[in-house]
Length: 287
Figure 1 (cartoon, rainbow, N blue to C red):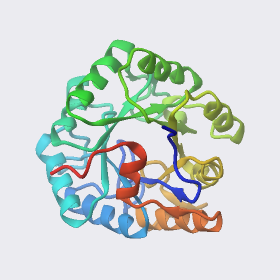
Figure 2 (cartoon, rainbow, N blue to C red):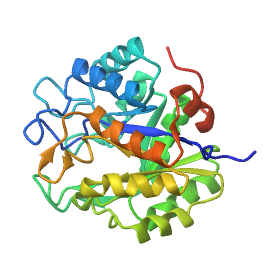
Figure 3 (cartoon, rainbow, N blue to C red):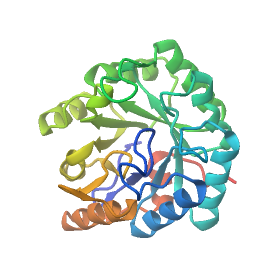
Figure 4 (cartoon, helix red, strand yellow):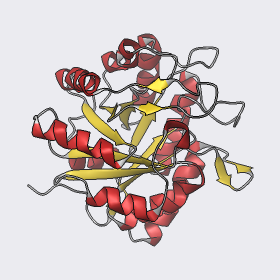
């Protein structure tokens, strides 16, 4: 079987909240379950198929509390059939065990960071983001046991070697889904340039569907390039709080709407969640 996205479709993920962005940076960042679900529904109506979830406590801090993830999931699933993709990156204040607690909320997908990084700026400067090979193996095992598809996040060429290792060892199943994250200097990602994206896509294993996450001002240019290359795209306030230079984005839906307009100029329609499930080999929406 050939795996991939049809040439006239694009799968759009919206990353709404993140671990670092907050209302002090952009007051439109959704933090609480009701806000996150309402924002997700707006993004669904604009053309998003996948929603990437980070959870916050009532004070706006990163949390691994299962009830919060369950609340978010329930609110979204009451509104629409978006594919729910939880973050196991969580935040720098969470332990490894806490980072995977979200898996018990039964998302369709979950992020799987493919290597260790060092935070080089901000309040957590010098705090490592640990994803050792044995930790990656443990994370992916927990996902597979629950029927959750890993979204393998690669910030550099070296992380793609970990993708290849997981494939060789039979730990992940086709179609492989890799999110190429570029321009996140805070966590040591490679530069968000056309050359870097092209090189990383060329180094992907066969039967891989790729997504591109460009951080900051690179979000729209790299999303456009990724669509031209036949990839999926991620937009949202987690990665970019601006709509234009000096202009804060009004909502996640505004960023989704822009990439949908560009997609249509390229002859592509945003895939529905049902279509995206088919392309990615996901089961029907979870209860």
